[in-house]
Length: 176
Image (cartoon, rainbow, N blue to C red; front, side):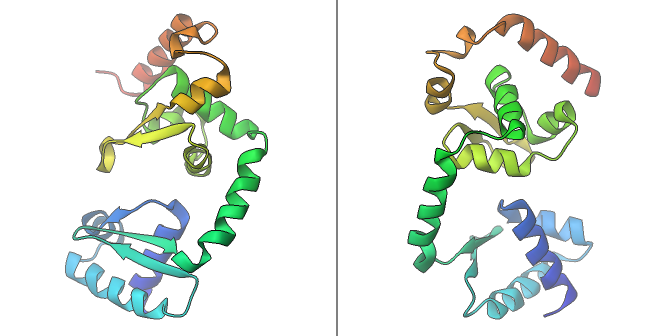
């Protein structure tokens, strides 16, 4: 497998999100045609493995094969029954108080990568991603409200003050 295929595999595995051919082209500094060729090579190399590529016309994602869904479902059920980690709880709080916040904004506030936390929260149904490309925002779900024991986000403790502080912090990051 060539270097570009390996790099694509690494990016898709590490982020667990679909990536556009255009973004992969920019990240790897190669043409979209080279990306498509590398994806074909990667797809062939994954034959007989537990992972496979799923693609549409402009995006590709690395996923587990459907025949492993029962095993994964058991693991997910076990994970969902556990308490939230501190990192996930902090990430969930930011989303709860600042609906529509981007991954980059959450990372700015927390000072660490939040990919794993967002994925775990999404799997639990506590947050949902809306939008596409770089315009993805994370929003609280009904399940999140149930988790916090409130009927609307405005009932969260110190809601107005906390939202104001978060917005002030985010405005420092991106002065207009």
